[in-house]
Image (cartoon, rainbow, N blue to C red):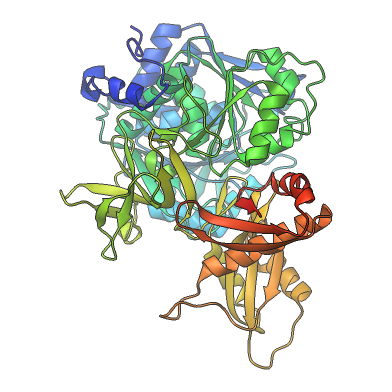
Length: 635
């Protein structure tokens, strides 16, 4: 049976509403992700579910896995985890790159109990914090292997997680050494915790049934994903099976994915986008996932050979952050046939309009900009595949999801819906929204209640709608810095900088960047009588901020911080100052004489107003600023 029978291609909000005339309950979605995969294996048995390329290189020997084999591996993994004590309240956690085994761990873990995704780039202290919060029972990571540091992290982690009972190793040698066979792990213990070979232990389990006999219900917790990128105190967002099954059904319904289509995955599998958009959502439709490189887009050979890979595997879709598209602009097609590509999907951070236009002109591929968040199980808003894609807009709300722009009062309640063109806060509710953060303290301010008592997720993002229902982001109420799709908590930077003996106050904000969207910078006020240079503070930040991506690229000493009437640092002023500096420098480098003033526009959000000394330089100014995401006007 075609799960998408009767679902129209979305061209406008009317199509979204037409889909919703069939109640979601009438679509008879499976109760669990395990049932999704069981049905996929039954319907597409010998078709390819997954192809893995170790380095993301067209010359790599592909590892192909059929639907039938993939489901058997997942079942074996579930049985292994059950044997090791994984339960809904005692998850298996993984600290892994993008491997076929990573997917086995994810979906096998959800079938056994629950799974916790962990960013491998996190420092051990943050990983420990996450594992302790979820009460992880089993940890899966890489065995010692040249060029990787994950085992070294595991050695530092294990003793500090009291619930951890077993560590499983995945040996990368299987992909590098012909004739490899799983052997004894090295070492065999971390203190009192046994270390086992994942590959060897999985093969001991049956692949035709769940030994546990578990009957999973839709409301059971399936997974835990942490927010905050590579920095900051992580908030842990649980997803139910119902959340993930709904999203897995929705994504191919939106895109029109068909059996045999190929979706390239370069995004990390610790993030919901990689797991859902380039994972489970394709297997619902019988599509094929090309897992391109253990490091995804970080794999050195992936982007330089990207177009050849598209041609060789007839890729139909891929998803990336704006920095990926910006990098691909520098990779010539060189005659590669990319006619198989239907859509390229962009989210996580705003796409600079010039990158959007240049990419489509270079490749002929349609970019679909969208919007979602971990708390919403990935995707909530998307430019319509069969309709008008408005550059700069994030698109229309997805079917069965209530997404709107609201005016929130000082009491945290929804005062009213924002009028078209009026900026408010994006709020949402529906089958995609998570049940709430694991730590109850993190739920303070996360929800807004309307007059009817309905609870809406307060995203903290500012936006407006137009007359046709398209949403346009207008900034962030939250202070997160988004560097190439990675969320950076400014508090971590500020705390590190304030440890310098000369620093009294520190405030970190995002500075526009043509490649990464924005990068972190830090403003500081010195202690009375202290003396230190900005260069010294910059070096201090590089060595004391615990994640490289969060280290400030610039430090500016100020005589005083801008503050509100109640004494809080007023960060918009700092962001405006950063934008003025970057835009002014870009214009000067282009030979354009101009003044830049940044402020808040009631209808457009943050806007840089550029006053030209010579109107004849207008085209030069537009070209100089086109790859930045902050809106600008030229006078």
